[in-house]
Length: 425
Ligand code: EPZ
Figure 1 (cartoon, rainbow, N blue to C red):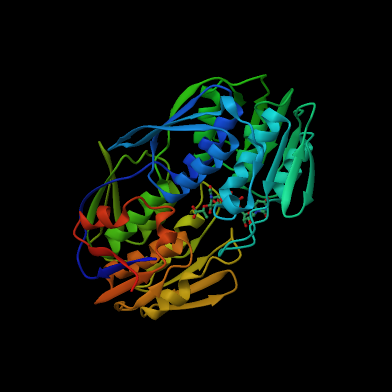
Figure 2 (cartoon, helix red, strand yellow):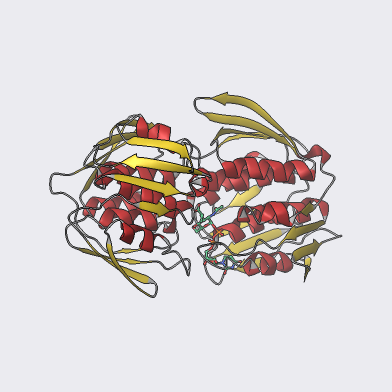
């Protein structure tokens, strides 16, 4: 397993191109199953999860063709005209929970699907009960047996109304995709409004779907009999952008983040502005630097979009660990998303967890240490801490990082970080 070694203390300065969003690319790839005609996606990030989803689609019989591997992301074409297998096996699903996003498209187009239950992960039990209940509301019969969800809708799905008891990104995506091919109208209430959900909706419309209320918490879908070929650019990764913004701030540096669409991080950037960051839109993206007043502790509560994203919670904790004052960070989305706390503490952070909240008291500086990545976003919080820490930090199990950050050591290294990837000794 690889590790990343960082010598802290350098100010970051330069430009980073933000890649396409992992959490948009994965449902977009699953959407290719809805049509017998090819879906071409551009601005795809080069990430482990994208490879895993490609493998999953290929074992369903989707032909996956990498058309271009240019500077502005990958272009890939997914042709589901020859799908001959509607089983998503445990071996692939356990590696990436987002595999569950093939369930809705498969049962909607083929009337059947057998998808392994994804199981939990480091940040929580991650149930899929809303995915199941929503598809049952659309007329699917779903049985849980042997660790698999077996869904059947031999006469097709039927449009219906479904109210989400709480916001679920993945369940919204699964149901929105399934509803595109259901007979009649589907209304999804209390739907997720994340930009990745909106991006998926725009792609589905490009494929011929009829969706109203895009970007709102109420999605109305008129089912159609089939969807057609389309080309769609993957929206930029707001979590990657927020991560690098905090990396710039903690080093007292300045970064130009190119390719960032406005409006994706308004709540996060507003809060980070209160913490002392200077964030301004430029003709090519967003410039982020630390203001003259330095870093100030602020309280943060994670919420569904447009609130502060849970996927930036670990990163803001690292930032607040060296702020002036205290920060109360409350995680409202996942039940176990403080795995980064003991690792940050090893670097000298002063964090006390009380249930769903963590009280961070800023310290003068962090000190490099050997630490372990536990999940994707915890890994990036350790990177942020290490960039500012005194001395050397060795981060183990960086395969977590590779799931969501494209070439992070190259992007940071090009902006002045002393960072390298080495084989674990
Ligand atoms: C998506 O996960 C993202 N993953 C996550 O990003 C992100 O943290 C999360 O949305 C919240 O924004 C992808 O898009 C691939 P949810 P998802 O359904 O869809 C519970 C990252 O770091 N829930 O919105 O799985 C669930 O346990 C990853 O990139 C149920 O109880 O999240 C959680 O507590 C991590 N039953 C809450 O709802 C269900 O059927 C929100 O989950 C579904 C979810």
